[in-house]
Length: 76
Image (cartoon, rainbow, N blue to C red; front, side, top):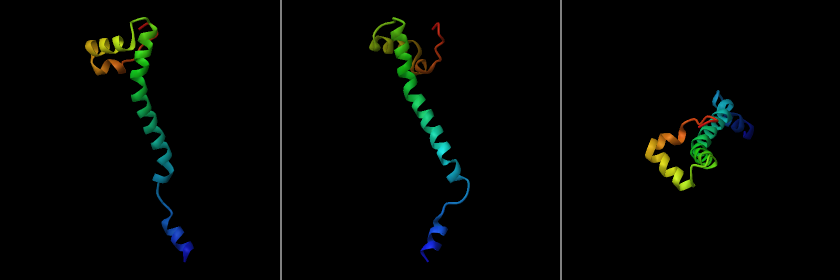
């Protein structure tokens, strides 16, 4: 009887197979969305554009929130 319950409760379909990939992809996208603005500020500080607060204020004033997600080339 217990074996029948275990077999009936076993998940079927595609979801159990792709769930780790979906979770991994979602966590990678979330990590990128959180880390990208911090990295942009860090790069601009390293280029000598000021302190973290100065760089953040300047980026917000000039380009809005989207400026934190622009791709920065090696020449900026």
